[in-house]
Image: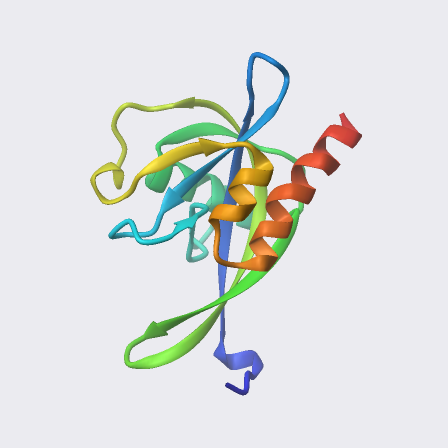
Amino acid sequence: MTTTARSIMLQCGALPFSIDVNGMPRILLITTRGGRRWTIPKGWPIPNLTGAATAAHEAYEEAGVIGTIVGEHPVGSYRYEKRRNTRDAIFEVSVFLFAVERQLRKWPEKAERVTRWFAPVEASKMVESDELADILTTAMSEFFQRN
């Protein structure tokens, strides 16, 4: 499929992570609606919110997590293709690192998705996108190098 700037739809995503009792990073993945594939919380830009704030909002709605975006800029971006209105569309997701403080018992999309914590390498094997898989592993190693 030939792509033009107009055919790429932008989204904001959160890479929810926490550090376990042994000091090891864990990444929270969610299933797509219907539970077919593992991914990260993501969605359309929200008017009057930054990309980071939109990503944090999606983390709450889709995974029920509360926390803080780490840094001012995305840790990466990836593209995926999806059928939309009988046509294939390309989506580009800017991914923001999201430090999880807690996960709620109830949240808006709980009935539509499954959430599960993974080690970064394991998480990278669960997602379909190679670009997202790279972000899952490199973002955590870069975070630890900075802190």
